[in-house]
Image (tube, rainbow, N blue to C red; front, side):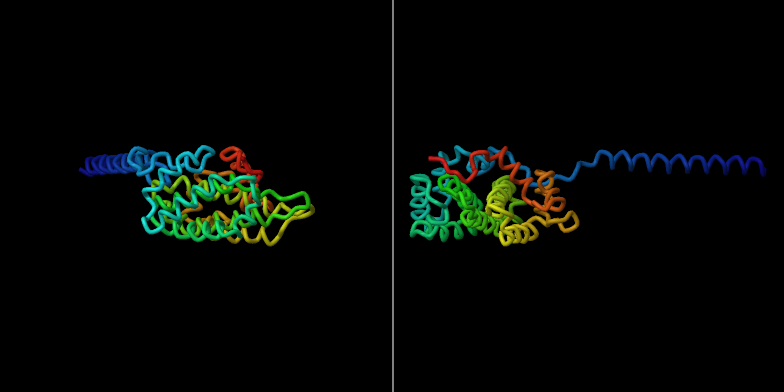
Length: 268
């Protein structure tokens, strides 16, 4: 009886071990098939109010600006159309800062701020027109340096990001444009802090660092949700934020690929 009990006990123990192993294996299998963490809302392009929103930031985006008219609130639509016409028809590649100080430039900045706080389509309109302005004006440093024009451009991108970056994570229309806005911001601000003939503009550099700390998170441990999404999209550029004393060099390199015509030299 004792031998039989011992044999039965060993059999029960083996069965329990087998069940445990099977459960562990099953758990590992399920874990292995868990989808990797993804960022950004999935959306069929055809379901968007404005298909292919990234096109508005590309070189040919000017051709689509009129599509945005119907999405701008009626209370500011006339000002939007006027600003759109003025920016797209700029002649002579004026210095960006000098143009922003004109009556048209001041109206542009006010309208841009209003649109950025509006609905998703208006926010896209604001970003698209700002990027068009970046193409139609000059903001590269002069012969003797001076990065104030690039700094002002960077400030306009920063204002947009402060307002829309976080919300873009749940917005199919703005998700990719918002990530690209950081690339454009980086291109402008690196131009600003590298403008001096010798050394760098430390004030511009610190402004860039402060902005990215707030929007992205400079270090891995301090990364914002938007920063984590940005890292998933532009991993190397984000990693260089904490590994280089030239924190925007990665975004500058991305910009040369994605927006190679946006170099501050303007296009007629």
